[in-house]
Length: 394
Image (cartoon, rainbow, N blue to C red; front, side):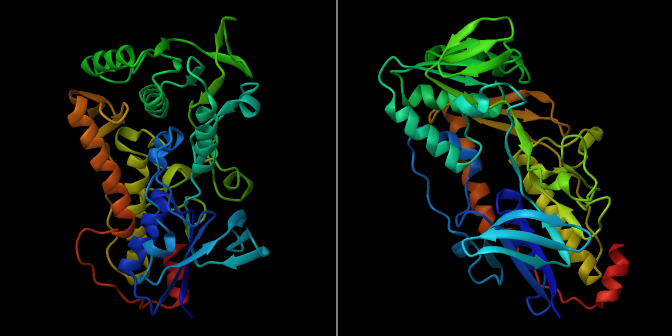
């Protein structure tokens, strides 16, 4: 029987892991199935562009994996039984269950409301394509002079607020940030960011905690009211609760705890990539939820799985950071260079050059989904028996 590898989720991390596995393992020995709710690969890092009316190129998963031997199963994951090695699914035909020998868990994350009242009822987010399209429709309904508030001063918030302000200069756009504006960037980058916000007419509320959201705006922790006909919530991400409902070892965040090869510390037949995994980065710091973390996690997991199944040496390359790419509309940006452990260096790029750099990174990430390795790789045969594989991974 073929070794059954099931990949849950086809975001950046899951999609790359599946493709890389197909490149490294012989199709005569393995059966690779990708389970995803959407028929297309979604460029999550571009959802602020979708929200402002821009159309992205469609990338059907059937095209992405054409000729690779990877099977795409369109379904929603409803449960994982890590002890019985089964996954419960729901698709257009009803409920189903599939079994696996090796699982790659890549279900990602969604927008986190942090328990703030009114977020679920009154705020929009851009954590996925459906929510970005809802915001797109709402923004299109706004007349000149309408107020929009983006809550959250991280990367998603900065990209969203500048994209909206540039696309709709007729709107009154504001940003509420818990800390200082871009306070994790170096001083030059912060100055550039302030200049962009001034140029685009964005009102910035720094050191502002939002305590409640309603239909007319947001109320701060110190009882100030920030009026907004549309509130966009970008205060971070929360992982899918499925993992916490399993017997997998999870952290307080709900993320699955993994070792240096992205393998679950409690279930050696489960690997976790992307936002759903809690992996240690340089300096012992947890990797942050981001495409910059998810892609190298996918590389490491796929290479480790292939090595363990074929008896090759397990490569261990610790994920590290190089830069943070921030688009500030279509014609401006910041490329903040980073230390390996995610601290800002003095060097950076800004302006049009940074915007072109960020666009190249986004295109490169999408290209990498269907080209998971940059050099020819020979597909290796699985020579171990099922018993030997089970012993090796236990």
